[in-house]
Length: 361
Ligand SMILES: [Zn+2]
Ligand SMILES: [Zn+2]
Image (tube, rainbow, N blue to C red):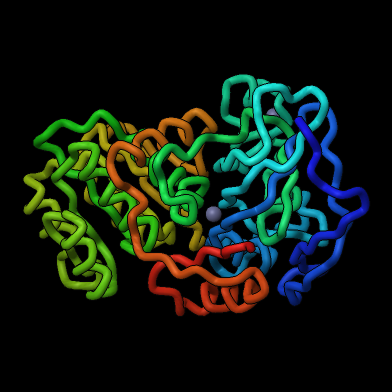
């Protein structure tokens, strides 16, 4: 593959040098890919809630306790951005299967590639993660290096800006939904938390032929969106006897809960409404601790599943699914890379109704 980059040319990467610090533009020499590496020009990069957590440097564990990300191997400075669509500009000498100019969605949840978990195809769960935008420089940047061509996926006919969402929010919901299948037509799926991920989950469930969906959210606006997306019922979890009412409308048939909030109240609520053999998939990271009577876990044969992003195979399947079903045709706001700091701030402050996608020109 020809290398179209002039030697010693520079590019800009936004990074923070300390947790919660400013995102500053830093100039670097454009790297020359070697071996199986691929260099892409970043076209679009989604701004995700995980970016806010990584920037803050911790996840809340409840009761004031924190999971510090600095202790988890994240090295400063960090260039965020793991929802990246880019165009190939150069590659290492061992890459034969790609050409310059191809636009690709990047799978960011990269592992060591060697351990048993990676060998099983679950690189997103590797104990030595090399995820782009977390452990390695991500897409808040003009260029990005991807270590191997297999992490690059064709977009098909998808709108490239919106397709960037499939690398994280899309993949996270898709992987969570795969964990609860199959669902019988009489059974109900409960979606707790109807923000971006919850809305995407409801759309994905409907497009997968699952129509008995109950939405749960404290916001009336989000409950209305959930219903217009196809949820049969929507409840405010704070109203009286809501768990009993929900179980009644579902005829006691709640087989699965997708929890996109992930705090003590939502997990408790989910466990309360599940029928025997039910599955609770926790995706949200709001934090807290779990207490549940062990005999119920056994006699109700409840499966409790934590779900974190998804595998490369799932992302490939999702891109195909999105091409068939018009999944990512949702309103997004495009912002210039130079305004990335405002994007992270707005998301952190809850001021973003839809999704922000950085457009890098
Ligand atoms: Zn590994
Ligand atoms: Zn994300």
